[in-house]
Length: 475
Image (cartoon, rainbow, N blue to C red; front, side, top):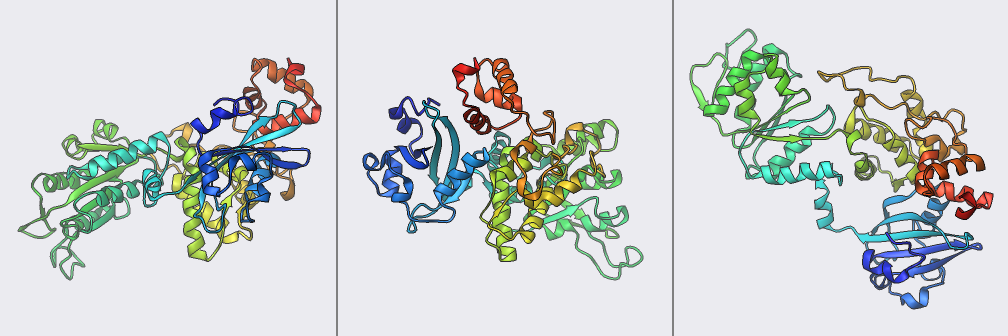
């Protein structure tokens, strides 16, 4: 993006809903305001340029100035923050970013882009509780829409807790079977002796304790969808019976002699590689080919950390309703903390953590301090206590959470959020000598120098101001 300080006329063409605010000499000034945003705010862009936003924006919670101040003071950007600029208008989604220093280094610039949250935009990021804006999740959504219209079997792969059942439900809702039964059976949650009866049903007297006939999951899901979770762990002798149902659509109850016709779409899910299970003779090859007509891979949360703000917002809304709270948001620093963790429990673990935090919250904004106890717990181990997958993947191990114990609860700073591999838990050394060395190593790129130092670029800019250093002096 072009430097907004040097070419104001370039702004409206590439960011139509944008405002540029300058902070300097103890006051706020609007440097640029797009025509479209001016229309939303009911102001003349020429007349408000140079004025403070506080002169024409009524007080709201959170206020625009409060959020801009947070960006400047804490050194992080805010994304998808809900804000209401005028009382009579709906909420906007705001991205608030530090945009650098003014040419004289006496002022700081903040770029603000706003967009309306429409029904269409919500639909683009997911299905009900299955949301995301990352490329990997957009591919999942594309396949859900494409496969929903089909009656072919689907295999969903992904780690435990990633949300495979949500994908299956979305497929059902996108199909012609919506409104019909959606049944869920976890193949590992039932003993091997009872799994056959749960799947196919049994007749009275079929075995000891069978005092009445029992309709299995296939019969109960007739006309709809049956989701078989952890299908890769199904015993071999039941796999052959499942194959027969998939091939001819007929179910025979345990202890029964006649077959019953059923119309069921089967969706399977597994966190183990079925190809390896076939090679190890733990899964039938013919059943594999019958099930894996269509495939959807659900990425782990650690592979789509950019979706954490969306997920966090969804969970906050849900828990606000559940517990009668009014939590507005997570601070940017809190989001950065969550994005620094590898989430071995995936979305389920994130949801459980946020439920805990909401229950304990006493303010409308959740900061890093709310996660202090969780941080201490995570520091007690460097690997999962239980490995539920068939293969150990080092990338699934939780990252060591930054050590916050050297800071009081009131002084947790972003220097403690140095990502893995940059000296976790160690305050960044922003001495003049280190800044000069990082600047030279980055070939004069301040953003790259900030990454090398393990801090946000806004933090580096502030230190340059305090040291009264310009780019020319760093060279």
